[in-house]
Amino acid sequence: MGFHDKLSDAWASSDSMLCVGLDPDPTRMPPAMAADPEGVLEFCIGIVDATAHAACAFKPQIAYFAALGAEDQLERLCAHVRDRHPRTVLILDAKRGDIGPTAERYAEEAFERYGADAVTVNPYLGTDSLEPFLARTGKGVIVLCRTSNPGSGDLQSLLIDGEPLYERVARTARDRWSRLGEVALVVGATYPNELSRVRAIVGDMPLLVPGIGAQGGDVRATVEAGRDSRGYGMMINSSRAILYPSTGADWAAAAREAAEATRDQIRAIA
Image 1: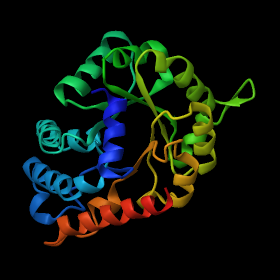
Image 2 (image 1 turned 90 degrees about the vertical axis):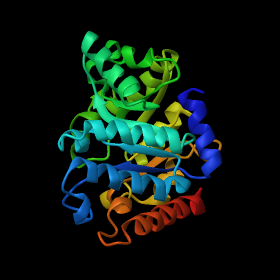
Image 3 (image 1 turned 30 degrees about the horizontal axis):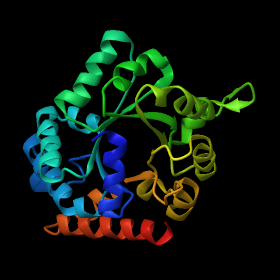
Image 4 (image 1 turned 90 degrees about the horizontal axis):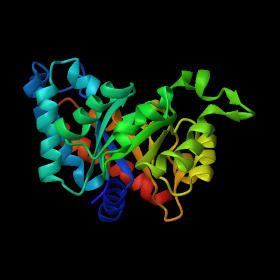
């Protein structure tokens, strides 16, 4: 089953567009788990098992693991998701972008070492930098388009022949990259007008939508702007709001409640 089919199955089986971001920050984790990489793994597995029923996808952010020397633990976390929650999409958030053989190694890292269903990539270096990812049959390539951070407009909103750069990326994804592989786009919930514009350009192409929760994106505006013709179409990511509602003994139960509440909020609008 390829990325697009697996994502469609995940939307249907979970009745959820929630993507749970796995960004382990030891300063915010339960103290007993913050001391070493094994504690980080225990925490992340606990979050996964507590929230999998409410999510269509998990998105571990590789930098949070690499900074702690926890790449081996990330491998084991990814294996746990694949083994215990096989219908949930696994996205490696790496934002890779490089040329030739280096891009090949990044693709190998994402899809072979970590076994991800999809990986986030940066299109700034052009089509040839994406081709090693797009060539992986059945794997998803989630291209940065209009990101959720405040400075994203510095480049992404620059006009090219009267068209913002992020729209050019969306059109290129629709017209060119989607013919080479299984493509999705990253569009932030913090910019619902742009999200609506991208949806109009790309039709039912899947969108990874960060920015709700701690970043302040509005759930109603996000769903109304970004849902596809079937009422799904998005992996709406929340990380900190789900990971850290409690550092006490109830941390897993609190994460479960936060995930269910976010899922239900999305459902009520969709």
